[in-house]
Image (cartoon, rainbow, N blue to C red):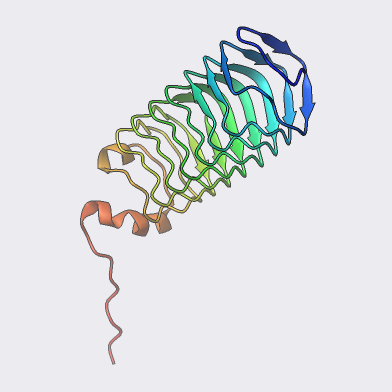
Length: 199
């Protein structure tokens, strides 16, 4: 794969290892069947990017902005996504594993078959996103913003919900563990307090 990319290009079956892509601003570029290993993509601004059957391993996408992106069968493993912006992205069969994604922005994302595992999503924003059936397993969700998100059928078991930002409407149809109910009690306006033991 070339170190420099041009608008309206299609790349198939390439493997890129290490280094940085000199691709500050790109439009209408497609990657199909590609693998990125430890590639620095921080700060890139890509519009109408298309990724299909792509794996990103150990890559840095900090501060990158992908507007109106379409990702299908894409895996992010051990990637740094701090401050990544994906407004209006369409995600199909996307999996993030051990991603560092605090402060990432996913507003109005349309996701189906999204799987997030062992990720740091502290203060990430999923406002007004469509996330039906999403699996969020073992993730840190402190101050993660889900207001207005469609989470019907989502599975949050195993994740830290302390300080997560969502309401009763967003929780409808979501699966959690019994122990997680204590972390969500404040949404009901109740205090959870054990009776003191009798002397």
